[in-house]
Image (cartoon, rainbow, N blue to C red; front, side):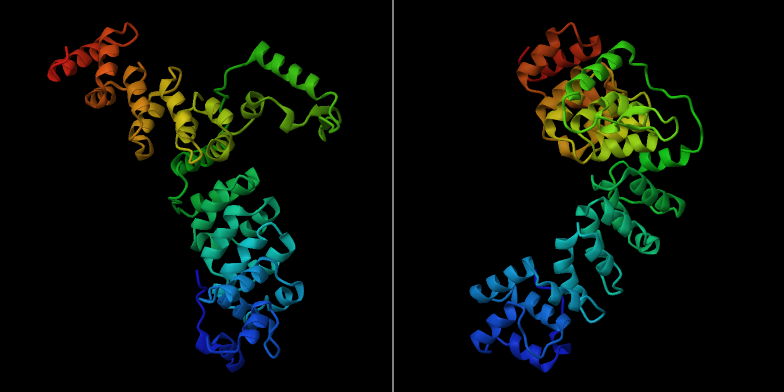
Length: 373
């Protein structure tokens, strides 16, 4: 996409280079970032514009320059003279360079859309830089959304950004489980007994197995506990159950949003319905996960209701069938889905001893209506 730049505001020299009638060698030099007489910001602007040139050779040369900008050109160009449209082109490429991003994010002309693009792909250190500008995040909540859903954003940073929105009564629509996350943060200061089950022997066995497997590894699996001075197992080496058990509700909800399938499989069965709903709303869920969730008989009915409501799974015949035969699915939802089932599915339900009487009866009635009884 051509950066939004008002060419008429560029110097005569820059406009001359951008003119399609300009000598080819001059345009080729400019595409490589060599433009005598132009200030760095203007030279970089010319490169960005030439990257969209109808001349394939010029465009290719300019795009190669943008992909690996000469340090002197970039350093000199990062000032108030660089158009926002050019920043939008180059900034995402430096999303993991904290030193460079500190300069880029400090430019007053940077567009919020550019910051959001950075927030969506940056590393932990740059995410911290993005999150320091609370005024910008409040004015443009999409930045909060991108930070929260970025897996590399530190948990505390993500929750701090979300808390900023909650405190200021800003709804971040782009976070699928925003209501659940906001509710969790609101309750964070209220101590509650943990609803988590005790994993007992199973958890102990998993921990021992992992420690034994990692004993021969080069990386030290333990670290010093600052409070007690004793060694403890590093968090990343703990079993998934153990890590989740120690999380606050807000941390569980964000893990449900950006975590792994294994983490969601545990969180969707959480006894706290707010956490369970967040897990089923995760944008990371693939269809095979949703199919497994629709079969679970140890999830709350709100999880199954969410699967039914989600437009993402409307086309999944397997999920429809699983929801109908799952006894935890609310009856009114199961009955709505029966007309969409295939003949062999209806026959299976009609004969099954694992479904409730009303479902079996409804399946038989549907077969009769189809003349297949």
